Length: 241
Image (tube, rainbow, N blue to C red; front, side):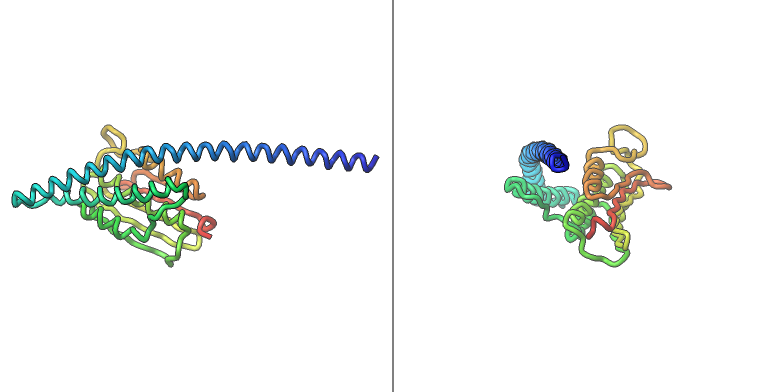
């Protein structure tokens, strides 16, 4: 009787193990199919965007060439469009090469922050950068996320804040890492229509929230006291190890 009961318990455990394995395999299969579909959509979008940005770069280059040929000064905004377009095209080509090789990665990071700030300043947006705490290497995914957050936030300032100044703050501490972008603008909202910019709207902010949440952090975005807008992402220490 004792032997029979033991055999029965072993049998039940084996059945449970097989059920759990089947469930896990099914979940992994669903996740793989979802990832493959996301990659397919990403490839199509990036192919289309690469073409469109290339057209913009060519048109900006032609306009600059014609202005010089007429002996006129090339508008700084046109040069900024040309430079930003070329940089965007380079980033898209890099991302496409990653997607097409089915590898996960992104060469962008805070090491390119100076170049990003310089482009924003060249487009007419005053930007300052400050760092507090003891700097240390960040995991690649956090480093990339921080860069993309600053990139998206500065883009939103340029588009929606009107005449504004922006500040980028990087804060290193024992509790984790935070990146914050503030502006003092009073321009229109991120979504169409008048009024102050609402917190958490726009596909850019949605993308930032998703990126930070995937890394175990949190993102806050909304109006500042006294005017302007703030985007702050916080990554806990456990995501930095």
